[in-house]
Amino acid sequence: MLIRKFLVWSVLILSSSGCHKVTPNIEVDRGNWSHRFGVDYDISYGTSVSQTLDIYRQGQWQGPPNYFVAGSRTRPTLVYIHGGAWHGGSKASSVWSIMPFVERGWTVVNIEYTTGGGTAPQGADDVLQAMQWLTKNAEQYAIDRNNIVVSGDSAGGHLALLAGFINTVPSHAAYTGNEMTVKAIINWFGISDIEHLEHYLAKIGGWNYPRKWAQGDKVFERLVSQYSPIHYVNSSTAAVLSIHGSSDKVVPLEQTLRLHRALEEFSVPNHVTMIPGGRHLGFTDTQFQVIYREIFAFIDRIDIPKP
Image (cartoon, helix red, strand yellow):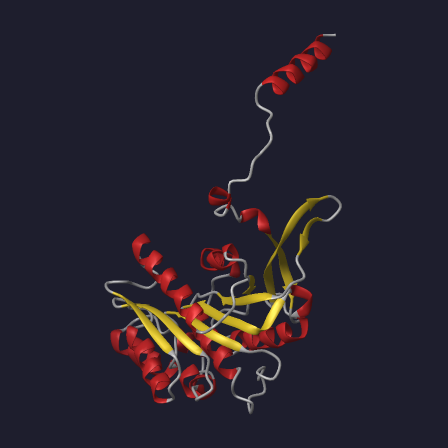
């Protein structure tokens, strides 16, 4: 009886006070977006346990039995590759980088790959394999093959540049340009010239992570000649925006400056956002706001349609 009285009293309170019809407020609701996406985690693009990726998809939460129902309309797609000096890191660490794109209604692919000393060039080959996998599975995941942006930070920036540049090199075994168009590369302080980086680190006595990634002269020579993005710049290369701190001691600013001189030689659309005093992923909140404004202004200039 006590429970029954409590339930009746609760209903009376709710009916007379807190329950009301929700009226949409466009100005307020425009900023509420986190309910509009779902994530497919750890999709295999190869046979290794490291060869997985996550895909963030736009859609709607509709309750059981499926709960989240992904939309079928293709959307501009960001492919993101985490950093970690080719020795570590994980795709989980990239969420801060990809959320501004998810918020704007993009499809986002977040790639994992092989890391560790002595594993070169497997991580790079993994990313190139993931790009090929995406061309075959684009329709299933609402990926717009004609509007791809590749991005990454540090070693991930190197891999993003490599994957994006090879997209326009038909002679390369990992060429994807006949099935997918990389419109732009957003390079967060990535390595463009492995040989130049190795000389810099040897000179300052820093951790020589390119050498440790290779562990052997023959492998290192192969990295220099076949896996340095700067060697693949051509007149068809996608537009490049690079973000780099002037005080970066892990990947020196000269890596970006050398790359953009090469891009200028081939008249490739490009822009450098240099952060005064910025260290390796060491930026203030204000600087991050400036960076993301420049990223989306750059994307608008290269004519990627809004979702």
